[in-house]
Length: 110
Image (tube, rainbow, N blue to C red):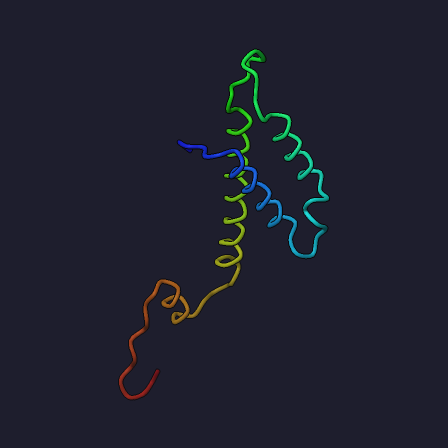
């Protein structure tokens, strides 16, 4: 994570991940305590003071790190749903997963 980008982009990314986490059946993400906490933290730390021994980009770095964690967990869950727990697969299905086709047998068998 070399470049952080803008804090606004990080905030929007965090809110997008909250929307994904709440799901379509859940309550609106703006009613959650997580939403209120994130927005309040960004508002309270618009400009940090060097007198408080706090690095100027500390909140932004922590938010970007948390955003990376939320995205990674969501993408991992999607991959897990797609590839895990399907039991044994047929050779044709396995070949299709990796982008191959099985050869046709002569005499019309397959």
